[in-house]
Length: 479
Image 1 (cartoon, rainbow, N blue to C red):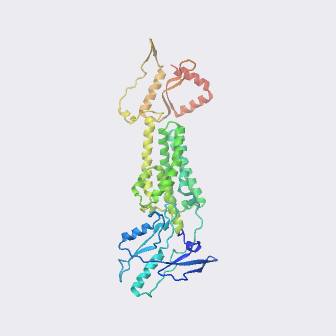
Image 2 (image 1 turned 60 degrees about the vertical axis):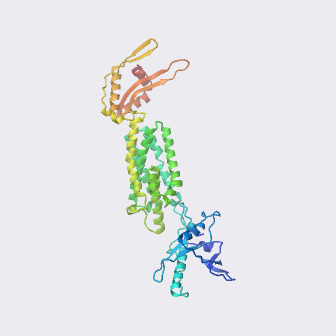
Image 3 (image 1 turned 45 degrees about the horizontal axis):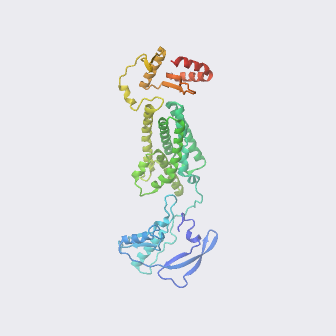
């Protein structure tokens, strides 16, 4: 089997002999030759095997024969002994045009590792000499011995970033997502947005700087401006997704669990599913773009492109990804950037809509955006509420200041006011009855709007004067 580099040819250091294909083999066709590998001299066995020249009438028959030699093309799952096939039908005395078929199974192209190097120059050499003998006679011979890649230093150690892989970097970048969802519950949206962007920028900056300082080709080979644009767009998309998750779930623990499932699920699906589709050249490119609409796969594809360009640049002695490479049809970075920018704004708008429509803090309803076009008369005090229990009728009246506060809250809800940090609309607190006693209302119909300064004062009272605050609450809102 062929190897993955030309540093040591497997034919010269394996336990198998070298097979010399001839039309006829003599009796003494097995011998040994000395092979020098660095400073070590080894004896390599050489055996002659007879090769038959077979004729097939069409290229379809050739393909059929070769496919039967593919390890998945026969019931024995073995490779047959056909070395190659040649088509000289387009060649003549003035034109040399030959098609060569070979068994590509030996490339070991699994999509998850390097591709093995085949000895195709030997096949070309054989066909070229056959054509020269056809023109000049059997005595003509021109050998291209030892044809292979240009000699260069062998890379015997895999890079640290290659060992880590795209999967690791995906998990590193996604680690902040569960924290974003938690911040969205604890802070107002404007505050959490500033905190998230600041933290994400510092986090990604340290990520790139640390990787560059320790010499990871993943960072040093690719142009830093492309990395900056990619990471900046994605962290903003990730913050928008955190807003959406926080708006859809009322419990911080649930949203955090969803965040961690997103982190680890994205990495596993990207490494063991999405990457195979990207590497499969026969897979439709349109479906790749559809899969990249999932933000996690967009991140994975971008990191995958960085890794591929860094690896190829290091291996070939060239540069990594540059802005000009984005026009390459095989480079998926351009489409990833476009998808992430569009999703960034769409997710942010949708998160704002969900937060305003169904979140527990506002609860304006699904069609809240149309309420401003509806005229609604606001009374300065709430109508009397009648409650009939059996033959008893009780009439409850609100105090003027309580009614004014309730009207204020209703106006703020209709106008989508953002100057007040806390808005309570008809808040209730009920303790269930025990030992045959009825339910107890600690808070009944509390409507309250507090600005940012009032929130700080209120929190201080709750900590320093909790007994007094409790008595004041019962006195003011018991009715």
